[in-house]
Image 1 (spheres, chains in turn blue, red):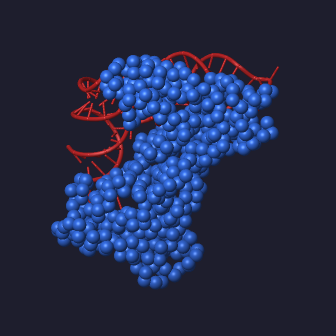
Image 2 (cartoon, rainbow, N blue to C red):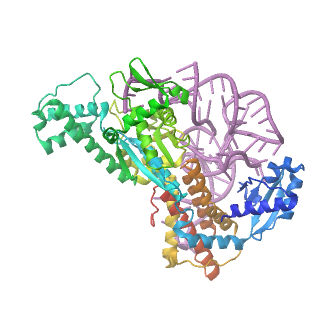
Image 3 (cartoon, rainbow, N blue to C red):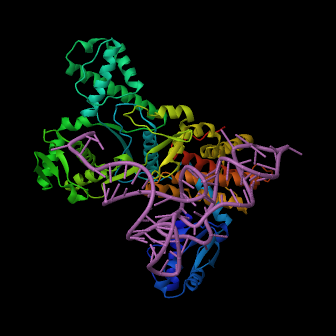
Length: 545
RNA sequence: GCGCCCGUAGCUCAAUCGGAUAGAGCAGCGGACUUCUAAUCCGCAGGUUGCAGGUUCGAGUCCUGCCGGGCGCGCCA
C-alpha cells in the first residue's frame, strides 16, 4: 500500500481514538511547498464543524493520537493542516519495494469486465490527417493507462465501407482511373468529388493491378468493385500509419456486418416496442428529445433507407451484447452532436445509463509561419499524419499530442516543431532516462542487479526524487479515472526535473559502498518509472541520446 | 438564438476532482562543465487566473450573469 493509503488509515485511527468518530473520506496530499512536509491532511479543517472545535485544536489532538512509526514528525501548520514528515528509512524501504515490483510498479492486475474503447474509426476514404493523429495518440494512450490501472481494455476500430461517402469516393477514383486510359467516366451526379493526389495514386494502382476491365463492364458493377478496391487501399494505408505511431487495435468492426446480421432491423423493432418511436412525414422518428437530446431524430427516412443513426445505435447495442461493461467512444470535437442521439437510442433500448461514455478530443489547429492553415478534406489541402511524422518523428508527435488536455485546442506550428525539436519536452524526459542508462554503463552494472537499498540519511534532492517516484501509482490511477492522459506527461516532466536536480548536486558513483548502492537504487527506480510512464503514452525510452 | 467545451506569464500549457506564497517549458537577462551525457542545473524578470457578483475558514477550481473564442444544432456521415 502507498504511504498515502497508509496515512489515510492511520489518520482515521487517530480520529477514532481522539473523538470516537468514524470519518468516511480523508484526504491526504502532497503539499506544493517541501517546507510543509512530505504529506499533509486537511481533515481538521474539513471537519471542524463535526468536532465543534477550532481546526487548529483538532489538528493538535490528532497529532497526539497518531500512531505511525514511519512518520518522523507530525505538526500543525497554517489554519489547521497536519503536516507529516516520513523517516528516511521508510522511504528507502519503499524504493526497495518499487524495484522489487519493477515493470509492474504503478500497474495493477487486470480485473473485472472488459472496457471497450473505440477510437480513430476514420472512414477509409483517404489518409489520416493531423487531427486523427491526436485522436489516435489520445485513444491508444488512454487504453494503455486504463490497462495499467487494472481495467482490461478491448480496442476497436469501426469502419464504414458502404454508404454514400464511399460511393462518391469510388466515383472519384473511377474518374481518375478512366483518365489513366484517356477516357472519361460518366459522372452520375453533381456530388462532391474527393480531391487530393492519393485519389490519382489509387487509380493508378488499380490500373496497374487490374488493367482496363472496369471500362468494359457495367458502370454500376464496376463502381462497386472500384470502391471496394479504393477503400481497402485506404484501410491498408491507415493501418500502416497507425502501426508507425505504435497504435494498435484488437478488432476492426465492419459496418456491413450489421446489415448482414439483421441487427439493425432487430434494433428498430425493439425501439418500436419501447414506445419511443413514431411515424411522421413518412419517416420513422425516435423521440430523443425526451431522452436528453435537443430534438427528435429520424431513424428511417422517407425513402425507406436508414439514417446513420440506426446502424450506429445497433453497433453500440452490439458492444453491449458482447459483454463489455463500458463502451467509450473517442471522437473529434466536431462530432459533438453525435453522442446525445446515440445515448438516447441506447436509453430507449433500456441499456444502463453509465454504459456509454464519450470523450471529445479537440481538433488540432495547424499553424505555418505564424498563420493558421485552414484545411478540410473537401478542399484537399490536408496535412497528413505521415507528413507530420516525417517532419518531427514519432516520439515528438505522440508526446506533443497528449501533452496537453484533450479538451483544449492545440496549436501545432510546423516550422516550430522542426526547428525547436531540440527543446521539446519529450527530449527532456528521454534525456533523464538516457542519463541513467549511461551511469549504469559506466558503473558496469545493470539496473536489474540492484538489490537491497541500504537505509541512510537522504539529502533534500534525494527525498524529493523518492517522493515523486512514490506518487506514480496515484498519477496512473487518477489519469485513468478522469480519462486525462496528459497527466502522465505532466508527471514525467516533474520526475525528470527532480532527477536532473539530483544528478547535478550528487554524484552517484562514489567510493562509499552504501551511499553508492543507495544512489544506484534511486537511479534504477527512476529509470523504471520513466520507462513505464513513457510507455503509457507510446513514447520510446532510449538508452542513449 | 439554443446546447456543449474552453479563456491562467509575451508564446505553448500545468495546477493532485475546494487547500497553504498559482507552477513548468519556450522566448529574455545573468551565472555553473579538469569528476557518472551542459539535450542539464541555479538565479532574475514576467500574473488583478477574461469581467462582475455569490457560496465559506479558504475559490484558478463550485453557483449566477455578462464578455470573448471553438464546436455542434440535416430525412449528410
